[in-house]
Image (cartoon, rainbow, N blue to C red):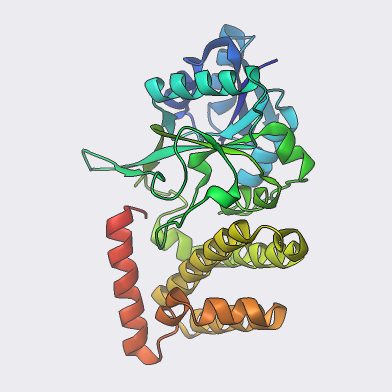
Length: 341
């Protein structure tokens, strides 16, 4: 059995997917690379089939009608046969030395009978036009190089959370928790690293810079103006995260640290939604912001109070034009520090 299955969602990825695939091929026969061609109209399908022909024991290709990033991830999970599962976007890549260390550790854990649910590692923002990337690491918040549980988790920094780039899940866990990401929706990577968490019991963190997250490409979904244009999809994901948290209240009641982390994550996503709507600056956008907060209030008043009167909630709900300007300036500072968008 393969140790690791890696899904590469591809949509018109001919210009950059080779770099991604080549970086993953260095894992050898213990890795299964699943190229998911999500209805591409360029040379993506041909390139995928070239790799299947050249590396038939490592690479498989899935060709499907366009359904969006979430649909491609779902297809990858369905096809995965490895013990663990990771998503690597087609314009990103992995670092070979860290890759070797992670595969060695996964093999070691499996052989010793310590089957973990989630492996965490660092990722690097590789921003267009900048010589050095911003490393996102977690050693201040979680134990390093040991199997640990939620009770061992310390405090994450404000504005910091574990992204899709940081995680490798046990494949069986994703299937057991019934994870299905919505189709034709952007920003579902937040759901991918949110919904499995109540089912995660054992984790392992390696302080290695594994995943290289490329940002700054024209037309990329995390570009701020594109995010504003797709704000309804951001709001859809925001509401789904809220509803999921409410649905799993009982399960989280006995796992306070997991609940606290998920609340903080929801807080961050709600802040991003609010700031983007403020940045849009239209009456329609400001109404959507008010509607979002009213929706949260109606769904669960306790969650609403925690979000609305926490630090981030207060900062994004300052009154008037002056208050909105202060909120945006605070967001810009965070953006420069964390190197996102």
